[in-house]
Length: 114
Image (spheres, rainbow, N blue to C red):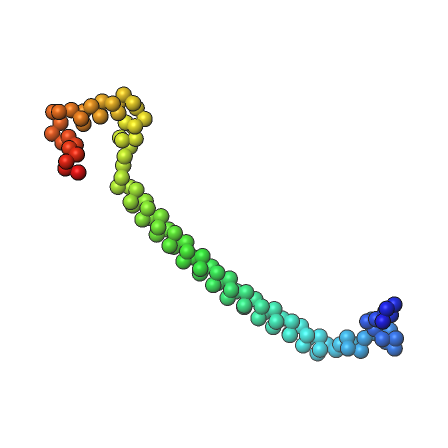
């Protein structure tokens, strides 16, 4: 088989005149109909697949939004802006520490109480 070439058309049929390709208007219409129905089927399958994926993304997005709302509600109650300001200002932090540790403070921290 080495050196032997296989040809697409047989020697008896001239190039471009394949008997299977000669088509009438009815066979052309039938081929178009088959092609269109195949494409329609593929579009329907792709549409269903895309819809499933979008539904999955939507549900994931909703759960993320719910988590975000919950986190925002939890963080809204905690405002430590005064504490942050004290931490950044060493003089203010020292005076607050002295005030809390003073003996006249009635709410002074006592280690025995826990």
